[in-house]
Amino acid sequence: MGKMTFMLDDDKQRQRHESADLIVGCDGAFSSVRRAMVKLIRFNYSQQYIEHGYIELNIPPNESGDYAMEVNYLHIWPRSSFMMIALPNLDHSFTVTLSIACGL
Image (tube, rainbow, N blue to C red; front, side, top):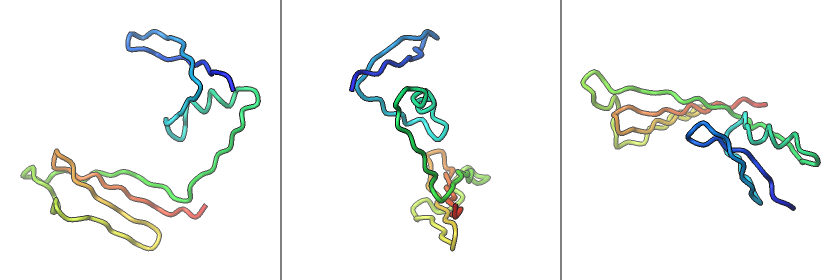
């Protein structure tokens, strides 16, 4: 398999071309890398959706600026079709991940 050429935007708003033997695109569900690659001849592509979704929420610090919940506990709330996990941040907020089984 030959090298693949791709275009990068540098920090000065200019574009440059680079080549590589392997390109790994980790830019999410609406990947610009994948969108460019599916236009190639003989590119083998498949996509499969996971059976759950998630959303990130935030619990801000309380009125005195401290953590709203105990910082040294593991905060996990499992339920039948969803689960919520809260992790503390240095700014005294919590990042909360809500995972929902969609049953696709």
